Image 1: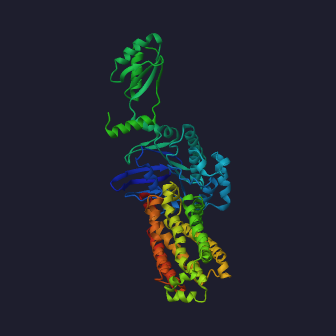
Image 2: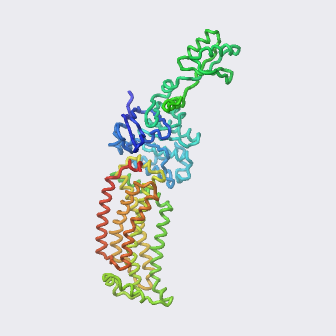
Image 3: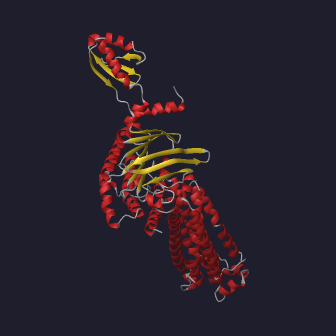
Length: 317
Length: 271
């Protein structure tokens, strides 16, 4: 049975006239990597602050690790780790300084501090430069150090706010690998705010999509693609001499096949109105004695879901 | 309250401050000018005046305008010694109070506003520290640094005063009871007042410069005290210092109580 780590009920937060989080309700289960998607200013950071008791909601309620963030903020924060959007590291201190100070702030057992820091520094490939001031680190190193700090006290729930924002693809990939490995190995739940949809698709068990502070979609990436992306591209491989007949058959079904079929690499690529139309298109080809060797729907990703929802919300056709 | 967590914040702040040239440079300049330069200037003044053919006795007119209490304190000294004692022991006494107050205010101004500017505050807010621990730890950082600078400065001042005035005084005459009361009683109280006031200001300011401008205003009452003493309007004796210290301690206590009760981390993110 799944255990809820985060339960949010009709949570709203105003900043003067602006509604940063609008009537948000959702649950995050223990052990999952939960993606919280939205554009800049969608309310992701505000939600993380609310869930950690750093700011108070205007209305609504929430339970995090079975605690009320408004009432039990310090006890809750002792069990969560947060990687903020900017690494929030003092350039004048060394990695050892920073991690030692945060170990004390989290009241870690004194004997456990040095071995834990050494273990994480080695894991995150920072050991060689851990005695140098952070000011000389690259952006990727700073982000890895910030992640080290967030994981130092073995949090049960890890919040990542744009963990790879501004990193080059190699550094971002490295950070993502670390997140996945550490989350799975240490068994902590991850609440991951991002606007990187490829990253979310690869890492997250479930995702929520936020638009202007409101929840617009929630589910696994596969559920969301099925639910929100109706049109999909299908690659069809037919006998070479039957290409013309196949094109005629496809053009005869304008209600199912949208637009003109393309032929980028020999195979035909058509846009079909929905996944359920694939068997009908195939049946029609077979009825017309077209020999179909392969019919492969192209992978639909979260990016398409996101833009579909965004267009719907903005009223774009 | 979690003392270990608070000391960790103090440790972090002090490590950062020691490496901050914007804070350390003015402190070094102040120490060099006031704790080293002034004693030598005043200590050597009688010799220099004589060297240029002047008369130290011409300063007697100025001293004669001083309050009776001070004249009583200066009785028994030769004229050149009177000048030294007046300048180094009495005239600079209120001025010395400005040093810990300035340091405390500068550091406290940096406490939240500086962290906000350097974008290092948010990670601290996500730690299990309570709002009260955060407030007290930030206050303690500024207060301890101010006391350390004041004590260090006092030591440097004492050595230089006695060395510079040796040719005239022929004995160790500094510090006297007045200065000991100042260092032990008034300086910690005044530093506490400056720090608690500025931590409250810093929590509401956008950046270090905003908060630091307010720090400039904090020293104004001390400047007024300095002029009053120089002009002979008041005479700061041990009794007055003890009373001043008591009043400042009470004000500091009230401010800390109010500050720690009203301080909320969510306001830091809204400011």
